[in-house]
Image (cartoon, rainbow, N blue to C red):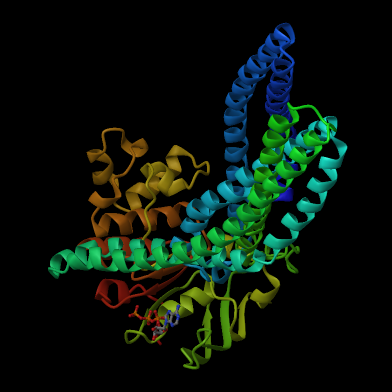
Length: 530
Ligand SMILES: Nc1ncnc2c1ncn2[C@@H]1O[C@H](COP(=O)(O)OP(=O)(O)OP(=O)(O)O)[C@@H](O)[C@H]1O
């Protein structure tokens, strides 16, 4: 948490100061109450009402500061939330395909929602509570010293006991908290998975599985929440028990001092109030500190996203001829010993057109994932004009290779954004690509044309494929990998789109298809069987 507090230093210090001043007012109110009692015992009405006035004033200011604390603490929490989400997103920006896919998307969602909530509660709220508790303890101890110095010694001894005991529960509490965050991840994953499959369940008359599966996952979270509550409850009970016993000890000591005329009667009220405050806050601190420590493993979890080093790529690609070559290429997925590709040698010459055919599950998409540098751990060599992929960055390769994937993804945004991804392209270029991808009729149906937000659920499979194709075409890459990119279109439309790529000048087109039409086969330089 330290780095986040540091990054929001000014706001953090401001909130801390508000809290400290606020504790000062609450201490002043307690002191005024004890003094008022002493004055009334002496039948000194004038002084009594002065202290009552001080007490009332302190409480009013206390209320005003509480209000300010609520506002600025919320602001601090939101700023820290943003920082944590930014930190996670930056790590995602710097990871690679395999690094990103080590976690499920729902896990990332859980990190950025559930876990941030936990960090808010245990990281920020608990820490601010600790500041309040420490200042109330310090002010309380000073006031006790003002009544009778010997009380402070007793408080000091009891404080040591109270700080040592709860540490015994620390590790247990941290583990329970981490397990709970994992259960939350599982819940989000399960909810996502089952709801994404709504159509399948609906058609299969199996909608009851929604309740069943979500309830099972809820039960998992419930069990872990109860486990956490057991650990937290025991920690709290032990610290509270010690705190109450300590108050009794202080009260007994005060009674002894009054009986021996070593302190005025008002000390009873003061000692009771401040001993109560000190030990309640001490037990609060011990518990909040244990909870605060549980945040570290949660924050560490986010470092699981592997960040790639920012090394400059070893080679420059600017004058490269764009011949794409795989030499002795073998690949198996991690954790599986089944070779998907074995000693594959293939050469895609710049500007030529290739069709790739092969049985289902033969490894065609896997080959494309290797050629597009999504998968980086393989045996053999992939090269662009003899420059090994290993000396090229992902970015360099993606500038050369456009990849229209088998399953198109459409963002919940306008058609323009879905095509440009926020980059600048001329209207002329956009119109050209829209025409080539056959998107004109879709645009006619959109009242705001290109800038209308798309309703992704209402797009047909073919429309999605056209958008995904246009997005890549816009980027004008010298090499295109096209993975069954027209599979949802009718024959006439498929041939039209495929012809765009087969006739594209100065472009290498490599197309996987299960439905090879004669018109297209005739335009290909080579048909490759995988
Ligand atoms: N992420 C993965 N982890 C493990 N195995 C995978 C993964 N992706 C694919 N496979 C396996 O690799 C093999 C080849 O899959 P791939 O998608 O490359 O085949 P394909 O030729 O493109 O098939 P299709 O024509 O049906 O699309 C399959 O047996 C598949 O189960």
